[in-house]
Length: 150
Image 1: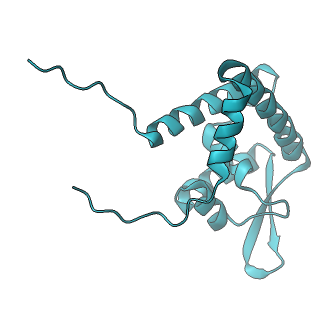
Image 2 (image 1 turned 180 degrees about the vertical axis):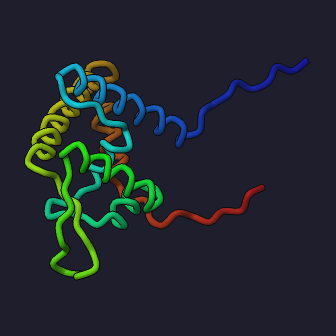
Image 3 (image 1 turned 120 degrees about the horizontal axis):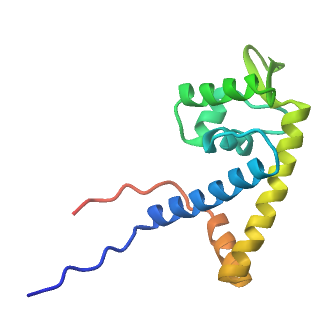
């Protein structure tokens, strides 16, 4: 009788689990610090914003979600007073999304929390491992390949 091979997670699954670890730590830390709760999707909006503002379409592309999903997250954050819409000087038909002063404050605080969380990870798996991971993830991957599926 043969024993089935153990399940080995694929790299995308491992990356997703690592991202969830960071998201859970960040959101819980921000709540514990007295900040208003946001979802992981709403927090991802801030990571995708340009300094001068970003269109909802660009946010959706960067976040890998539909325009409708990005729009819902943006409008929830506008309702919380963390984001605002302003006219796009480059296009009369577009509007830019940018942080309010309160949103910028919360984002700076979240960036600080992420630095501490990354430090905790370095304590747990080693600074060299975190550095190697960061380096590997910043290398250019090129276009996604089209492969033959066996």
